Image (cartoon, rainbow, N blue to C red; front, side, top):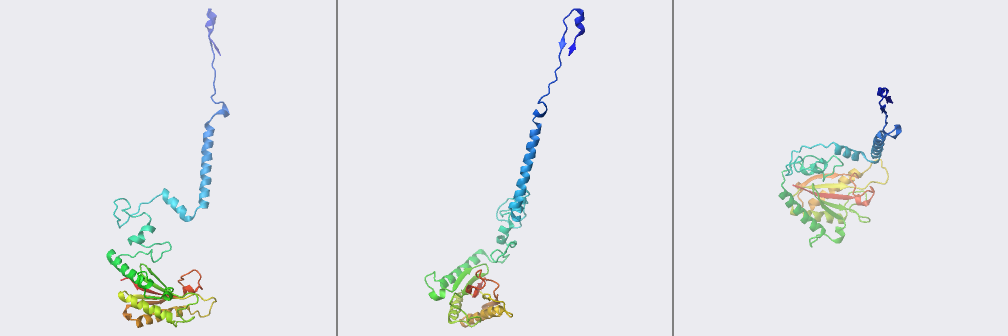
Length: 281
């Protein structure tokens, strides 16, 4: 408090009071709340990060990382667009097998492998596919004229792939195409192969033959699956030629033993089969 000395001259003293005001009063301030909120937010983000690392796979984590640091691909093949990606997908696994610039590197299959510059136009490929479909219809009887009986049709499956038309002749439970454990064909298999030779005479495609066999239930000192599968493929070649097919059309004969299974059970009879492939020209 300050007292003005002018009171000594007969004037009323002037009193001036100075009061110090402290805003918030110590712990009543709000600055610490902001800092605490930032700390809680950071801890929540940390625990979310730890949960994501534990709950996601390596592939998913890579996808998250790529999302926050995207890269712009450079493609030498345009799909018709004029943007950064030139009409192609930025995911090479999706686009490369179709555009011919590479093959799939994650579990590649025949259908995923890039064919490269084959020199075959779309019209030529469509015409060849049409011929394959016509052969399929004759083998399956979908066109109204079947060259096989009901019994024979139970042992035939056809499919068109990038390699060509695959005609698969397979055994069923109780009905064999070869003598047990050997390569001696049954009358049913002879009829099947000669019928395929007649039907495939409408085209000039080369032929590939693959033999497959089921696994043995016990481990043998000399496992005959390689010899048997190759011998069955070779017998098929002989029957095709006796059925009227030119020997010059036979491109290759392969025995795959029990390495390429048709079903998961390696000892299933369904794995005993011969594939006759009409290769694309």
